[in-house]
Image (cartoon, rainbow, N blue to C red):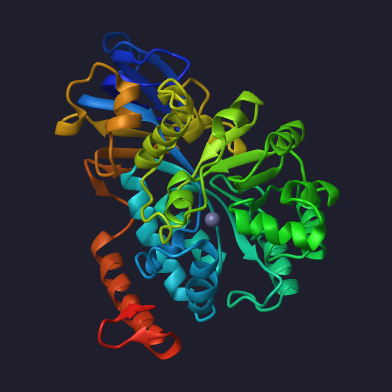
Length: 449
Ligand SMILES: [Zn+2]
């Protein structure tokens, strides 16, 4: 097997280790086997293919631990609305008319955006997930995916029972897949009854699968659940037997200290999506308190219709800055902590334990930050550049399982121009639906005008 040697000005192997200067790493098959000096490695592997990144920073591929990738087709469609209005008046009615093909192309658009942001692994929950899987397999990215399950009928699978059947079929088909894993994904407690959650738990248990849901996203949700069950969402899940290390709970904005301790006791995995929470006016999750209590917190963008991008660099920066602001403490939630959330913690939470670091034995899932960009000069501190200065579009190369999927800014696995053209056609179809279905001003062509 011919090795690949990647040499760079900087290599950040993990946040626990100082970045390496003028070093190389060796990739054999899909794994990293060795790190060292150029001279030493070139003489040890004379047949290897060598790649030089003279002004590059190699870092572990980022992990977007929660998104709804196909929602890129709805980016910008409804803005500046509260979560429940946004969902009930715009997103859910539109999704009722969603078409399989839109999901495929919307996912492709998002995959391109994620690759350009150095993301190599993501977690998705949406409708028509087999289309998400198909697009993801073509792109070369890794993912944990699950069909979003609701009590009400879905345009993807029809009645709930069919959704559970589809999830079971996916769990069976992808049991030993190298890049795709399947989660059981009840949307949230306000769209799934206790009975539905129990059915999901049974299914997840049968396959040892992860459960992925939204939890305590805003005040209104907590109020609604409390009214229905007489207790807050984490305690409802506790009584249903849903709290475990296999549970991935997204948002957790409205948690008090007792609830944080409860989730920590059961080793529940949390995903923090600060930009979506800010945009929907949901609040700011108590991340420093969660970390203090030993919770594993990953980082996600949430869907591109409530963010409105899939740039995990900006998500890292926002995650740090909001906590420093509200706590009036610049030393809280450091670059090191947040980078760990966006790499190894996210990967571990999604069940991909051999990615997220660039050390021997780990999968060669990595990206190269091109330090020639003016916003990345000078390079005193590579970690600070990644968290506070980098932007989507500053990544030149991405490798997954030892294969380049982007090389020198060109995506090798997908046709970007074809995808853009398809998206413009989908936009026209969606606009036609909007004009028929919604309270829309023909003149202004704008929702809720
Ligand atoms: Zn979400």
